[in-house]
Image 1 (cartoon, rainbow, N blue to C red):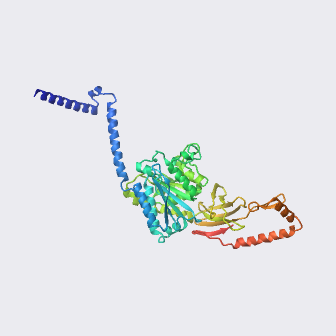
Image 2 (image 1 turned 60 degrees about the horizontal axis):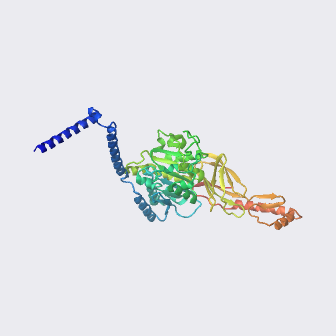
Image 3 (image 1 turned 180 degrees about the horizontal axis):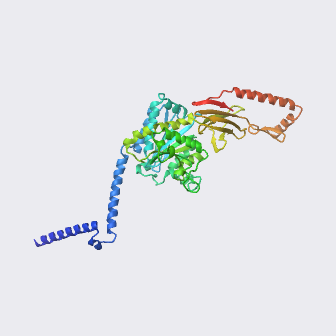
Length: 490
């Protein structure tokens, strides 16, 4: 009995001590001196960490609820490919760090075939914690599939653009609910940069970055956009400045980019009414400079005009808001793609000699940027701001360049070029720099014939032949691109 009483008294003593200790810890009383000096900090940090872990755990469950998992996304993409096989092609551009395929959808009336048409790409989920884009791109694909041949805008896009959708560039970051990929690398800082060369070693880049770069080597995209979250604005190059300071730093095609960004902003439910960004658009460097971004790399290295679109103030909104966000962004996403054929200058480059396509180059006077024509059809698609006069120049090694002035209004223009081979006299030899494979003896015989007694006859023959070629060029029929108001051949 005595032992039981002692145990009871000891337990009561401990209980009172604990009660007093707890009270002292809460109020900072006398018992504080009996404890280690950092005891309170340890308790508070431990509690804070437990609370933070609990909040993050709940947040991860709550945030992901209603969003497609990576497995869901793969299944939905493949089902779309089966359901809309007449206008789509499903393929992978590579894999993430953890081996998740980076699935892409091509939408066209001739998917997988090369045509003299512009190509556009949308990329979502560049940052793992910004998943709205991956959901909206599935909305976009389904809308085009359901409305092809029913809605004029859907039909225009499907029949005149090769549209490629990459819903998730960063599936690992999405699974981890964090910005970077599985290696904790921000993929929008992992591309080669024009000012700083830390990313120039391609072998050291992330697999997702390499996949994008190889994708653009395979397909010549005219324009593109990435979908982000955390703000509401259409962002355009340049993204960085040479001295890392924040100020407006425009690229050579600043007018064209502002025009593109305005198409998205003004088609949006409320982006253009932004109080933070005038007209709902911003130059990237004027907002905040970043380096190694995908937007600038596209323009510099791939000939692709890319926008960075912030489409939701909340990075990870409740899934119930996704239909509303699709409604707000729907016309913006459609009109931006359609602008590839509804605005700008488009055409092909031919040889006057035999009419074959020439994979030449297009420049615009006063703009330090070159657009390359396609290798197969020699088609080019030059984005330019409307309501202005431009001098367009076509060049091709071994051919005489040609230029013409145009006035670009609200519509698109088809402008085809027919280039004449360069003919030069080296010493006494009349030579086509591309087509003549004569040996020395043949050259000598040709010179003797040309400068001999037959020169006058030969000269008259050349004049008549040139006149006939001119007539042939004028009569030649050239296909007119869809959406263009007028066709010009020079």
